[in-house]
Image 1 (cartoon, rainbow, N blue to C red):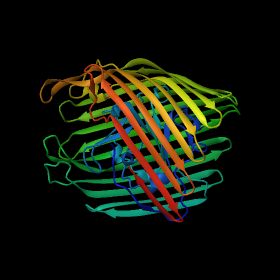
Image 2: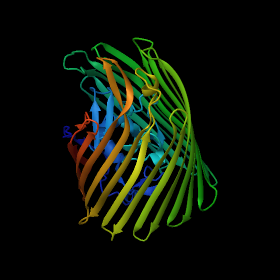
Image 3: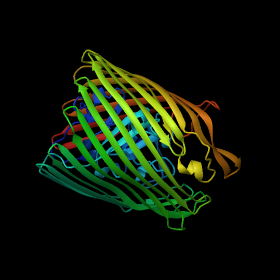
Image 4: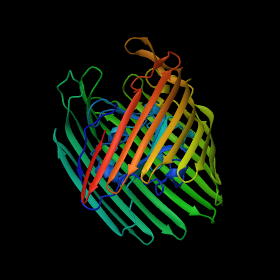
Length: 526
């Protein structure tokens, strides 16, 4: 069971509620464009700005851990290596995006969640299940789309906070936004540092952490055309213990930059051209070892609203990725080019709703790959929605798996086929029940094959994994009280051995409660 201490928060000003937002909440992760959360035809959740503001989270892992089907693994306190498992899948089988751009490391395939500060985030969209047809490699278990702070509708907005705690821990942030007529500007900066505490029971060495993050965004409208630029970055230092218990530390930089042009060429055709750059750098301070990922992407997406009930999405993307590893046992310098094309059709007929898509990948090392998805929904009146989905997913082997220590250049991409059946039912006013059953079959799972203990071995496609699960949820939203109860039961099994996958809970329960009284907020997570 996932468990944490209850948290108590005090907010100045009005106290908005947590739930009952699905009718008004718009998400982009399900379809690639703004759509209602109720029309996502999938198991989706949104962590709102109010939830983030009221939380005591130091990174986004602290926010994600309280949502059904999501598990967090940590190697210690702030800044230590953190893994996210969505519905039993591996941490590198989940796609992490910032404002729609994937930030997974090219070297290890996963994302350093421990360095993403919630203070610069507007909301987090959680999509459970494969979404490779829309977002590409890595989206086998799910997609986490982190939406950063931008200027709102107010002419001027600003805010900030300062916190302190044990272990000489300090956190602070400041933000400002300006929007007027045809332009918008926003900036936010945050900083946190701590002396930390020992990460091993057998050690008395504190492991500290320091992180400075900022987010800049600007936009201008010229007639019907919009031009936007944004830059998110986190930089700092984290201390840790190596395999033998030796104290080490490393500097890190993670960033995402983009320029985009949105052009409504007609009443039915909107085109978006985006150039993005992603950086993931780690440099050791006790040696010359380093691992750097630099990725540039050019994406062209077109939305065609054929009728009020039919929408077609077409996209192309070209990517160039450089991954270098210096020092260590197996240094490498690898450049990889790949391009992708996708199409999605979204149609509504009466109470029926269908979203279907296909994607083609042409990867310089992994070859060509096709994925497909089919999402169907049916409304039983105004209170009950049934949805069903079938989809395939894939993950291209990381650079470390191909060229690093024990690397294997003949590795095949991991492939998955997933099915889900779910429902959401509105009870009396403010009450909602949800349930879903799912299965995810993963082939060509990459595992480390040990030859000579403790280190000699190689990577190989050997495992076949089946993950069956059941997810239940209850939500209540009243004038002052909001409540969420959730549970996930799963059996992530290695079909090659019949054993359950490591670091996966068979069942997990979570609860969130929020009570508003005048300008006070009382809330807790469990």
